[in-house]
Image: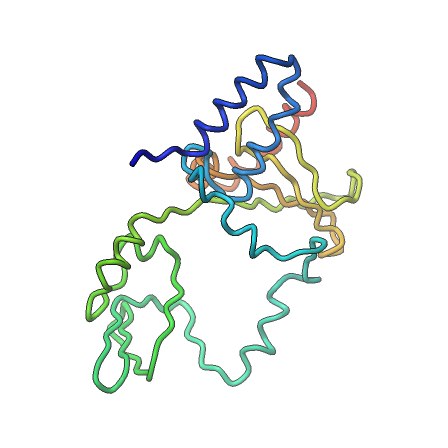
Length: 226
């Protein structure tokens, strides 16, 4: 069975379209939208399942929690014993329940455990499971992929843009700062969040803060003035 990725399929039909009309820019946004929403390049997406989560998406207008989502946590964590900066390395099922061992060798005991670690942690085998995970689950973990999305927050002295939710454009390099999110209403401050996705985001993650700041500023200037 052959596997066809979204990227080659899109480019095939895109080429047929631009052969019929001269203004190809009109058809560029779908490819950027796909990369942005999944955090992956088009050639890494399944042609059949890249939009499988659309049926479960929240409907209605975009909304943000005033002051950030951290405002929601305190009332939900009252009375809970939360261990921060605690890296688990072993989860063991026993006849009496579950034992969890952290990197320092400390053991925690519980009746049950819900594991919600990122897929990358499971792929890297950072946590040992006893007994081992079923072969079917290990195979699924190895098959699944995940995207990369980097958010850069920019705070200015004043608002110099139209106060709208999103500022987006078709960039010269797919995934490199295709959208800015206006956070003025959420933070009462002149803040924009710029997104970087896919392979461009993976490159950006290796850079220091100064490089990122200069890169975002130069890229924005280049896009608008050239």
